[in-house]
Amino acid sequence: MTETKKPKGFALLSPSRRSEMGSMGGQSVKPENRAFSVNTDLASKAGKLGGLAKKRALTDRENGA
Image (cartoon, rainbow, N blue to C red):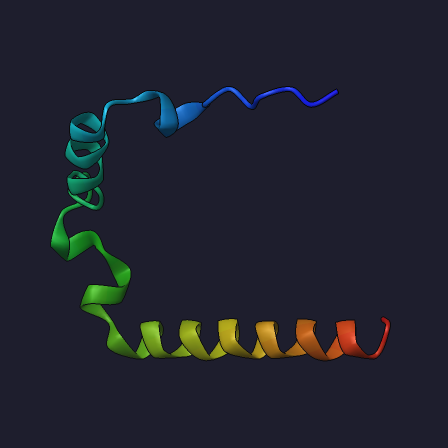
């Protein structure tokens, strides 16, 4: 017995409303308060840490940890 999945969250919105809401992303914070747009070194370090974490997770998965 298979039930059809009912849409949830954004799937319930009309395409135009989803587009409208998506275009608002990031506008709630002023550009000068966005840490990565002000400090590129901070953004670089965060990206490197994220990459290392991802690589570590993949390695652990391959080794069964």
